[in-house]
Image (cartoon, rainbow, N blue to C red; front, side):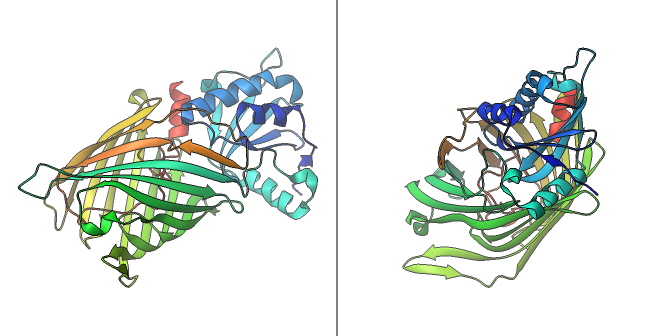
Length: 389
């Protein structure tokens, strides 16, 4: 029977929480020490990995076993496991490049389930994010070229959002859009809701990541969406997404919506090329314009930024393409000190689309922090960072 040994708050948990990690907990099995952490306080995955390896090295004397497994969680749902063993002088390596990474989290999930059954004070996570609020300020800048009399129409909004982890793997997101400059249609002059939804992360047998979301998304969509991602080894994986939505918008004097019956979806895969910090991505999709097509992306990762290009062809769009870039916004580490944490958006992203079509060749997003830098489908980026370190 799987029975991790529980301890009261100790030096390991205090030090990791002081470093900025959330949902921290230390457990022991017969041969391995487990440490759970959530690195949402850090803007960059590289910094996340660098800091955890240094902290574990400094804590080597307090970790009883020669092997440690660090479980990275997202909203307390295990995502991946980093492993290291002590060297000849009894220390773990402070160089993250020498650690091993595994996306199989079955043992970590068993520990979580055991804690849910035990349900006593000793099973609580330290610096727990459950029920606490992240108040995030999202600036939005949009532009389009659809008129002959002017070069571009622009739109600038300030769109603050709250994010709350209610239970393990869940997140409520509520956003309000405040228009600052609007050269689009008149309905965009209104203060209006943006993303308002509830998502749930979980694992499907076979080491398949899954996320279900219900509520309102961007591009004026309302409905439900599910994503799945299956890694194969360390460098490539396949994914699928399906959604059923309707349109919701403020039109003149009131809210209007269409029936929730439009189906969209995609099936694709990605591959990580280590030597250039590249990701190649290809998918077949049914877009919001009811057009079916193919899309390819090439993404280059940097420590604080991401840039890339894409090309697509659909039934209604002969050829289309563009580029995108994402930049991490400081501060790069923001610890949670109170019940409410106020911070800027993690990454600001700008996407240029050569053809300004409203629905054809377009998909929706389910979260305001979903960018090409960090999203549900690029979790294998963690392994690429370690191999290139």
